[in-house]
Length: 41
Image (tube, rainbow, N blue to C red; front, side, top):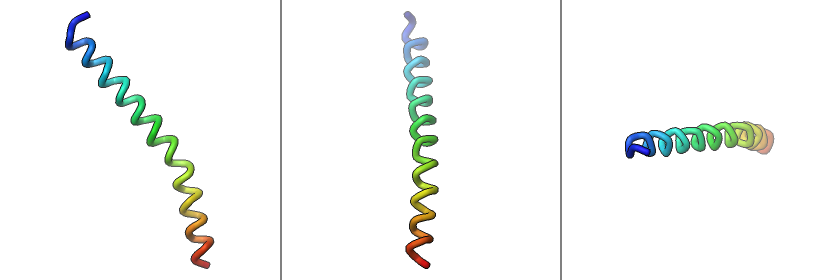
């Protein structure tokens, strides 16, 4: 396998992992914001 193809696969895998990680934190952070606003009242 060429080196450039291996690097491309590594970068695409890393980008996919980052995308899943950011989507995973989007849900809990919104619920955490609601808890913060609820405590402020």
